[in-house]
Length: 567
Image 1 (cartoon, one colour):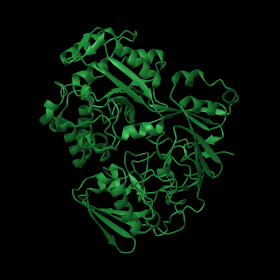
Image 2: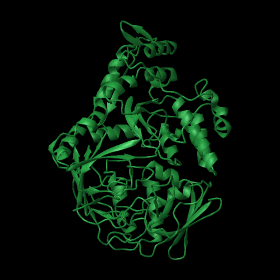
Image 3: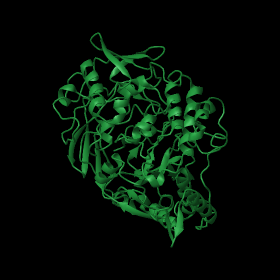
Image 4: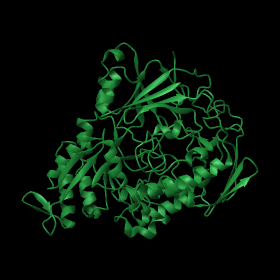
């Protein structure tokens, strides 16, 4: 993305992979929810997220030990214009789909066009900046960009490549339970919709000896079973039905592993550090709804969330409050906006709360006694300023309509936290109901922005780029299927997104991300939850992993990718 890649052109394997890892055996995971489609590239339906990374490959592959650097996969080489106005890929002549057929330039161009036409909006957004695709000899393809963007060649290089002869026989926009053909290390071996999917390693995988793949894809089988809720996944783990459990309960992590397998040493508890930003998880206001349009209302409801009480009573003090979208990293805003960050935001200061450019946007802090009186008094004053009044214990507007909304949760969501929050809101006269729906309904309603408030997670990287417009861009206010779940349509946010797209140096990049972090945090679009700088992974003691942990920690490309079974 910026500067030179850390690995030399003659590298033999990724720094966090063990090139001597043995192959064989299986690994079993548990997931909450289900699936009704095997097409992970469209808005419609719910597909196992692992499909994208196990079955399909892209032209280049990431090294997760760097913020954003790519290395050869389907393409054996890449050439980029100095101004990044075009990028040219040369396909590896050995590249093959799982059925043994060659990956061709025709497949590459067709995949890009198909995904832009019928795929998720992020593919369309990327392709909208492509002026044209040109063949270069038998194995080369050059993409020209309408507007040179530093990240555009990298994002294009990460698009999945499909087999044209297979994909063009389907109605790609519709859900399907017939697996698409990819070139990845695994194929779909068996499945029961909504219950189980099994990925089988392809022993003839064409890229198994490439540097980016050496030491990866070590399991013969990856088995994923689906459960009704998180408690069922935990019970399955303690019973030995699955091999891995990613824990998020600090009390359980410290004292909940008294079951026989753990006591006998057949279960290992591993803490995996990472250098990622905190990302954002919390209660998301749908600002498309009139009751959440006023930032004073959103500020008031943020004040009503007593994190310190939850930290003390539920989290055993093991977490930190999410301070901002890129909190805990060099990309987070801090203090007064200066230099380029201020230049980006100053013309749109009126679209931000007063003083947003002059200090860090802090999250409210309570005394942790469960009463939260000081913050609730401030919240009540803000609601009154916004035109709401308490009448007979109910908060109402000038027309007498009550302030009431629904918190929509999917399977495995933070139902207990939502209940605590709803109880706290009663003290302001606000009626918040909590509704739990199945995974399919939740996905459909989330795609259509058919909710008042949801809980969502944005896992943000050390190298944010064009996907940020998919998350926060104003087009997502109306366009379904984006990740702009809060309905951000703020000119200050747009200015930061534009600056991020135009950044051509590391300094400009950091300033633009800090501007974005400041504008989003100041807008009070999400009531932040908490995060941990380590991942807690309990696993079967027969599973092994390299000593080196990538910069991103337990992330895409780590588990099960570089792990193996010792048997």
